[in-house]
Image (cartoon, rainbow, N blue to C red; front, side):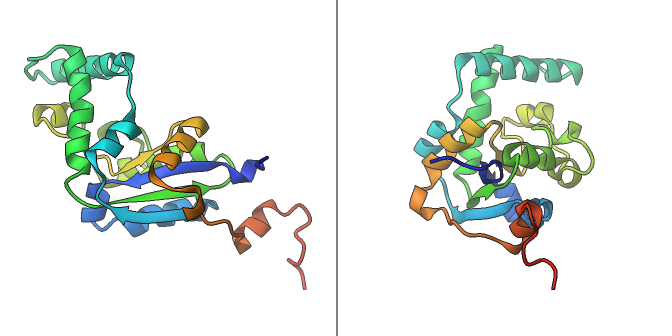
Length: 201
């Protein structure tokens, strides 16, 4: 079935730190303010099996991320006691441990350039270097080096898809298609209706 540009979907998980710090409403507000539409939402404690399927990382990814961790530790003068590959794998291990410790909220958001818009609002993966004005830049100060030193996941509030194809893959893991609502909003009509039908008296 053909989709219009404003029907692009992206996937978001509000991680345990967002839920525990009562920031869920703030995150939703920021997405809604741009004109994005929430089409699915649920709260649950994810399983390890689903999380491994979700993160789906390659050896190349582990090496790249692990090398970044090593470089961060070196820059901070902290000890390095593993190979980069193991540091990379530790990222997923610690994420799984953290994400299964408390409830999360999974959501599907829809709108023009939904993937890019959400990514821009959320900010870069490391909170300490994320821009002011982004969720991660404004609401947390964690860093890769600090998380690695404590052997835990980076507390960066939100997971969001980084590509349309990845969003569709992730949505299918956590939601059935019939769970995703199809509806129109007044906001969509003013943003996407070519003729602004019915906007004037």
